[in-house]
Amino acid sequence: MKSVFHIKQSVFVASLVLILGSVAWPTQAAEPLSGLGLVASGAVEDTLPACLARIPKDASAGQRMFAEESCKRDEAARASFQAVPGR
Image 1 (cartoon, rainbow, N blue to C red):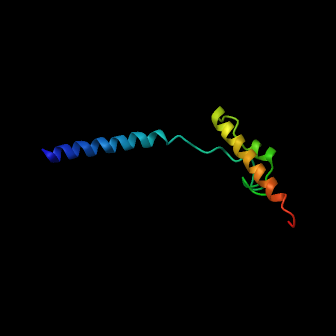
Image 2 (image 1 turned 90 degrees about the vertical axis):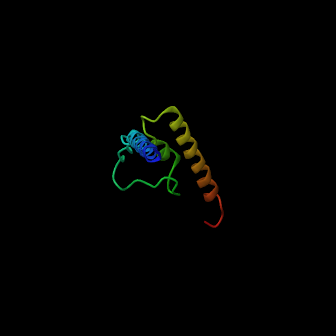
Image 3 (image 1 turned 90 degrees about the horizontal axis):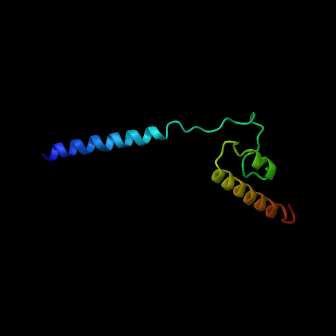
């Protein structure tokens, strides 16, 4: 009787993993804007307008807000780094 329970439990867990795994399947990254000439996110050469331009147009309001705050944080970090004398 215990083996039947374990088989049912294994089938249930396997089907649950399969269902939840298939939900994440259609998620894809956005296409790159252009070739390899893009500046890496957070790089010293990056700018606030360039960072804001990388935010996808179809991003939700929360994703857009989070991305904008990240861009502003990176810009503040770059500004403080560039303000150091002797660089």
